Length: 221
Image 1 (cartoon, helix red, strand yellow):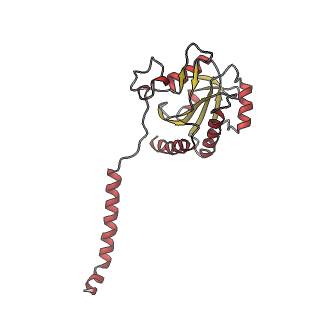
Image 2 (cartoon, one colour):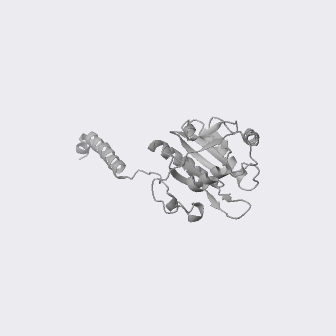
Image 3 (cartoon, one colour):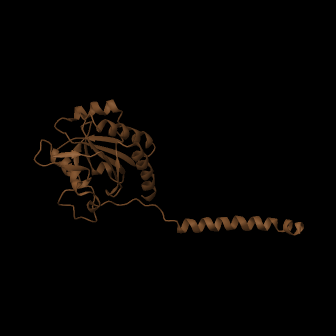
């Protein structure tokens, strides 16, 4: 009996290996590939969406823009063409959530140093205070890589429209001293200018998830 099993031992091993390969191949075919959601205004809580867009269920993309960065250069969609990027809204004199958000952006910048197709974009919501010179001082203090991360200022209405109508990342506060309250959200944008995720910029776990999702998006793109 032992001689019988010994005789066919090699064939048994081969059959076992082949079976494992076949099972793995079937699992790969049947296992659904994770794909990031494409967010539309209709998917987001109403307070973060301009009333003109709350009905919109498809084809939402980030609008064209022309803003000025920490070096005095005009930044447009062309600078982010065919790039994945993370966007947020902040202001340099903020002492509550902004320092935490900026520190997390710094971490993201470091984590993505070998990913040239992923950029960062931070918009000030107080452009009357955050001049080019002020943004430059802030950038130097925080260690911003000018080649990867733009801190931008410009026309207040343009910035607020981007926050409300493009990135869906700010609350409208009409008839107040401040017309808008930015959220802590980091917004992940793909190469087609579509929103692929929202992440709490003050939460370390959310930052980890953002980095994982960027890796997924790079494979998809």
